[in-house]
Length: 106
Length: 120
Image 1 (cartoon, chains in turn brown, yellow):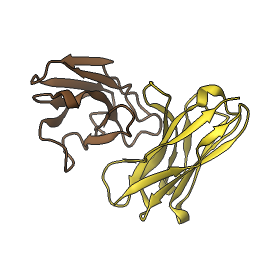
Image 2 (cartoon, helix red, strand yellow; image 1 turned 90 degrees about the vertical axis):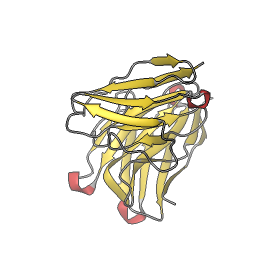
Image 3 (cartoon, helix red, strand yellow; image 1 turned 45 degrees about the vertical axis):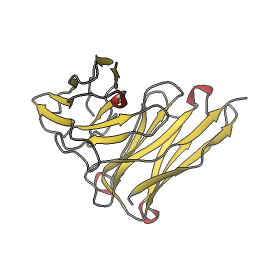
């Protein structure tokens, strides 16, 4: 298994670009996935295989990965994007989750 | 629609046991494994454990907080994974999610969660 590290919180104003990072030694070889979790709801996939966006996810969500760091970018963040975001490593034999980042948009 | 459906949650007393199920609706499990993740009220997601695929001999790993008390197993003929929880503690109270690949999806699906409450 391998560890994924995220910042506990990120804060932006509406319309600004939010960037949430995820670092881990396995990321050069393993895909990163990103899940959004709003209060009281199950997590929702927003990015898979580093850069791909599922259907129904707004274009303002994008992903990138370079070396040991994956990044979720929300361009023109909206108040409704306020949520917890988790990076995830599908192939981990142990804990697949980063610690989560609380995104505040206000 | 591809989905995972958990069941089996409920109210139990400390020290009791409970078994949760996770059924892959209409499809087979796929991907490298099935995880169980829990979330206590107002807290973040906490990984509980994982069972690998047949290809890696259904190997299991657990978080330290549940090791020796919880067991994960799966029955691929029923497209179902299970979480057997013994010696439950009040701190095990949480919504429990199963997470895994289903069918031809290239990402892991999450179930809707099932609530486990451990209280006297």
